[in-house]
Image (cartoon, rainbow, N blue to C red; front, top):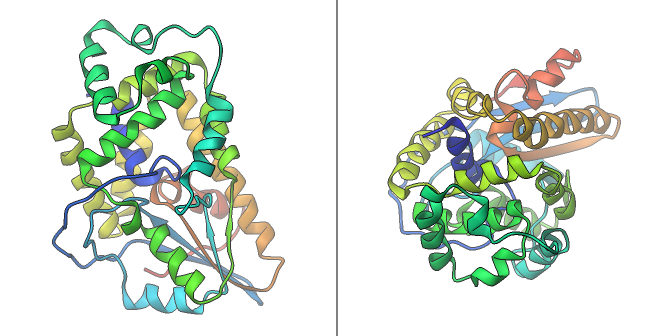
Length: 299
């Protein structure tokens, strides 16, 4: 399996919008201690928590240290706020970007040896092939990711952000975002057609391989093994420079700037973003450190 295909598997965990509806079987609860950092000055504390956006039901990921941080934070910041009660709003943003005239059939945009896998994914998705044929390649791939998430047994309601959003909503605390739905989707929309087709091919992988890789990724995240996350996530983008720059590096730079600007405003903030964005030498954490900002690992 190519490194790019492995990266597509990571979207199941570390991409925010891609999860709109999945069913999941129960999983045996296991204790976990995902990585957590702190950036602070005299009147501001910003916690950076690496998340998995979709989890098997029953996954235990909270710790006493994290619960104290979440309870003491004034505001929750996530990558983008997806309205889980009205997913049509998010899909509406996707369709604004997705439809283009004169596109070749989706089956003509992949190698012949992947057509059977494409037909299978389309059949499982329930999306009419005629609708997918009218979509830009990235958007069709994006929708077909839902099939892979179902095969992995992942549940959006069990994902870290969903749980935290409910906690903050129930507590009457504000929730904000680093990117709008349209901005996040726009990163895919701006990819070259070559990169979009690579993305689509990467979506069409065997469910057994996906489960094995996701299990290893989940184990690394649960233990707070940042090096393993960086090795498996960031290094696997080495053969997909355009995707890495668009989906990882530029966004990390934007978020690192946001953290530094947020230090000018008093308060305590919990920032929950995909764990891949906080691991490696081009992570938000590393970019802050290179700018001379003190980042302390607290879990």
